[in-house]
Length: 188
Length: 100
Image (tube, rainbow over all chains, first blue to last red; front, side, top):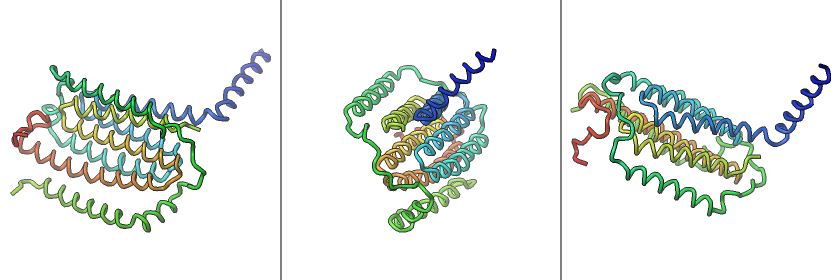
């Protein structure tokens, strides 16, 4: 019994150590990527738009986790706040405002649309071909000079990228006004 | 250390799924969600290259993409609400009033 316990402890320790050494990150990445791809498939294949929106929320969380693996925690926070907190809540509100019984049940994959499948296969083939041929795919990491802190992003945003920042704020204002105008009871 | 190609494969997979959603579904809400999926796959690509080249520009671009996507969703959903109020449909095949 004791020998067995020691044996299992040893196996466990070897397993954990190996993953801690270099594969733990890969394990996390594979988990996040698998959940993201599965929930993305659910987004496009589920019939009910509410289920689809919830699957999209799961997918966006996984993308935020991938951002953390890429050492950009600020972007992960922005992803969770804006996408999950604002955009998807807006989606769910609109879905629930609409008449769900009449509007939801739509047929998936209408017949006689073989050209769509052909186009998709062409796109997949093109992407695979381009990636297999590209030299950028296996570049090594550059000399570490980026911390990914908020301070760096803030300095860049308010010095180098000040003009795009202002333009984006104008775009947000215009979108706000457009949403108010379109959402009025009657459009004159 | 995760190789860059893994991130690129993940983002291309999400991109293809999003394109498939846009082409195959007829529900306008699902099409907008597939659009979000595509924008997210592009963001993964941008941030991955930003990390591997140690360049802040990719992250800045991703932040601007997120902002513009939020504005786009607000406008698109308000148009959708106005459309449903007038025509009572969310299927793109029924939206042919402009003979496009």
